[in-house]
Amino acid sequence: MSWLFVVLLACAAVVLVGAEWPRIEQRLGAPAKQRRERARRKANLKLLRTESDDFAASVERDLKKLPTIEERDRKR
Image 1 (cartoon, rainbow, N blue to C red):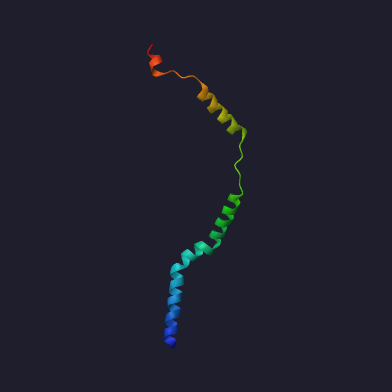
Image 2: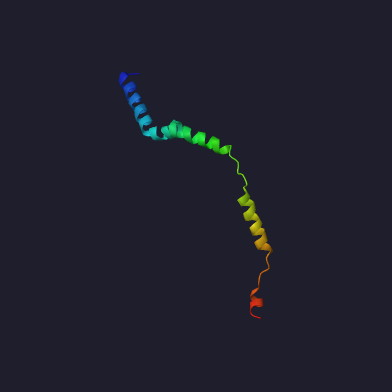
C-alpha cells in the first residue's frame, strides 16, 4: 500500500464521519441520554383515578339513565 492510498482512505473516513455526525449525535449524545432517561421515568408512572374521575363517571351513568323525549312524542 502506498502512503497516498492510506491518506485518501483516512480522508474518506473523516468525510464519512463528518457527514453522519448529526445522526451519530442524535443516537449517542446528551439529548439521546435525556430521552432515554425520560422514557425510563415515564414507564414507571401509573394513572391514578381521582374523585373527580369517579364523579364524572357517575354523572355520565346518571345521564344515560334519564328518560328522553322521542321526536314523535313532541308532536302530540
